[in-house]
Length: 358
Image: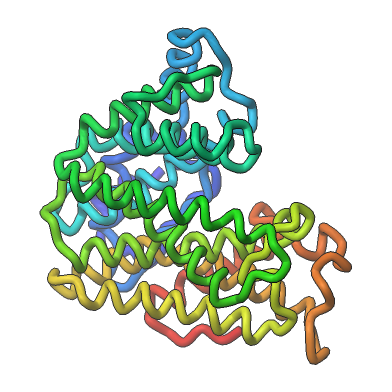
C-alpha cells in the first residue's frame, strides 16, 4: 500500500469501492489532492462516510418512534457522502481548509430534509398548503406522521444554524417555488423553454441551500458557482433518469426531444455556464484549476449518458420516442467496466481542458 502522504507528482489516483476502508478519509483525500500533479486526476466510485450516518438515522428513528422508508434511507446515505467530500470540501479548499464538524453536520441534516421533502412532494402525501406551511413556516406546522415530524425538526435545526438567515430564507422561497413549478413537468404541453427554466432553478437553488451551511464569506460569484453547478447536476440527473421519468410521465429536457445533438447542445450550454462561473471566481488560477479537476466527475457523468444516446440514435436522423426503447437501452449502468472507462476518459479530458468529442 502506498503512503500517499509521502508521494509527489502523481498523475492519476483511482479507487473503485476502496476509499471507504480508509480510517481517516478526510486526511487521506487532502493528501491525495496535495500529491497530484497540476492538471492531474483522482476518481473514486465508492460509498463513503456511511457508518456514522447510519447511527444518526437510527437515532432519529428511535427518538421519533418511526422508520424511514427503505428507499429514503438509502437515498439519504448515498448522496450526503458524495456532496460532502466532492462538492463541499472543494469549495472550502478555496479557503485552504476542509469543512469543519458543524458544516459536516449541516450537510447530513440537509439530505434528511431534502429527501423527506422530495418524498412528500413526489408522492403527494400532503396538500400543497400543508407543505407550504411546513417548509415556509415550520414553527407553526403540526406534523401528522414520522416523516413530517422529522422534516420539521430538521428544518428548524438548520434555520437555527445558518449565519445569514435573510439570504437563506430567500433561497428557501426560490427552491420551494421551483419545486411547485416542477409539477408542470407532468403536463405534455409544457414548453422546452419552461422545462429548462424549472430545471436550472430546481437544481441551482437546491445546491445554493448547501452554500449556506458552509461558513464562507458572502460573495455573488461564489453563489453563482454553486447555482450553476446545481443546474448542471440536475441536468445530469435528468440524463440518467430518462427511462424512469418517461415511465412516470415526467417531461424533462432529456426526454422531450428526439435529436441527440439538441439534447447535447443544451447540456453543453449548462456546462459552459458552470465553467464561466469558475473563471469569475476571485481566487488564484491554481485553486480554480484544482476545483475544476476535483469536480470533473460530474460533467463527465453527463457525457457518458450523452454518448449512450448518441449510440441509440446511430445514423438515424432522430431518436425513437423514448417509450419505445427497452429499459436496458436507456439505463446507464455505472457499475459496468465500459462505462467506468468512459467516465475516466471524460474526466481526464475535462481535467486537461481538452475538447470533448461525442
